[in-house]
Length: 292
Image 1 (cartoon, rainbow, N blue to C red):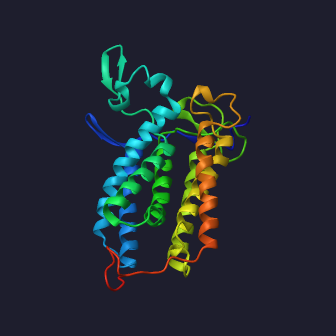
Image 2: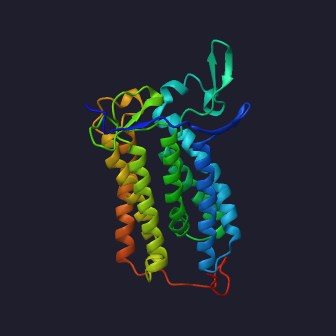
Image 3: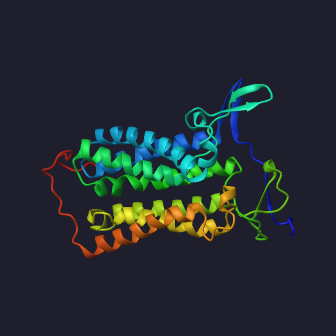
């Protein structure tokens, strides 16, 4: 397989380091994604004349739930055979080398676990804070979450991880940092582009259509289809993440995506066949007047 047209990729995962402290692209993209998401959701709440203090509380819930859920998702969906024998490494990422134990950082986060964590956080938040339906919160929260997903996948690119199988397409990447010698599908770029398209569509439906954002569950359904259906398709050209996936007709990422895809289809159908939710300004969190 010719590599003449391939893109040779050898980016450093570190942005810079100061002594023992290093700033990595992945962590930076993760943090910036949440900062941008917070700003976008605050603007959305102001646009609707809602209590913006809710956004601060919601993001505390979501950040914790995303990190914990993504970690546990990796542990239980992809690595339980190992972690069942090394329970301490679930919460304390250490490894034993020739010079003893050392801190190595978490070696796995699973996006599906993060998604389940967010759902749980929104359920708790909706019951304790807004007193509104869970889907009402999800319809707004998932707009910036699509952008956060794109930025996290950009971090994966800088880490030269979670890429695809061999390809002779001209945009194939040779991930030299991993000692690859043939071009592979840059699947993290594929996912980044799909998530960005989903984010733009959600913004359009929210701001530019007359009643779609008031059709409870519509935006959540679009998010589930835009993120998890594209993830399902891209997995066909992605390398397996764990050895146990070899020989499976569908890998773990695809299996975990199916419930979200089916739910997304049902939510869109339900939203389009039911009348929009009537606007009611006499409910908690609504401020008189709309600030754009």
